[in-house]
Image (tube, rainbow, N blue to C red; front, side, top):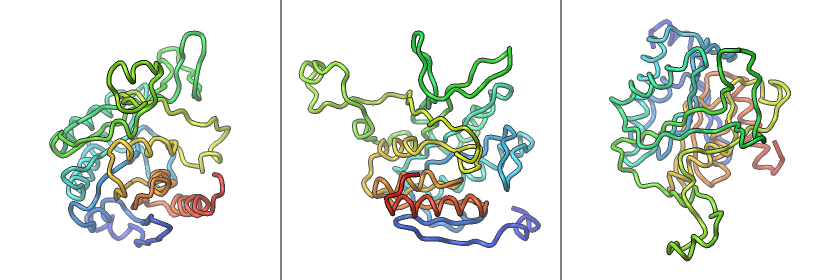
Length: 278
């Protein structure tokens, strides 16, 4: 961050709600102040650099500038992550910019090991049926984009996971005794079907262009498998990762530069703690 950028950056503000801390501020500035090796799990979805309409962030940087910025953030995430921590990065390109997620993953190779590559399936067709919310696609050149990437990075590639904690019951129950399993639970695999609820406008997504369902960060935290984990989302948006952390009894820190998104995140956490539906 340059001196001019620092002067324009909003004053840091911190809010404590339940087990969660919300920080309004520039994420790189906040990360540099965080304690080394203090985070168990990072779950985040940064701007994709494909022209989405965020309130306080221009999502159209030059590609090299964007990648350099994300590597600078990745460097700080590597510093604050515990040696046995997990960094789940949700990102997607566009039909016209399909390479960008992979370019970023390659850049981050200098900092992390790509331990798992998960496909978050948002919508799918099976036979003549379909499941999930299909965003309209008008182009005659491209297929409907029904998935996004979740890159699971670790420091050295040897992190032990709770695959059954994030698993699913067996479809064929005979597999339990026949294969000597101790419980009705199997690994979920690396394709996760987690659909959005159908929305009819941005207001139902809290006027944010890049939300994800609470179930996505919940599965990431469960897969990492540490009880009372300390969770970080440096691009918190409307607070979905913190909701997941709160639901699972984990502490968390969420960072966002936009005051309105911070207000939404605070309200969602308060409502969740009061037992009100979203």
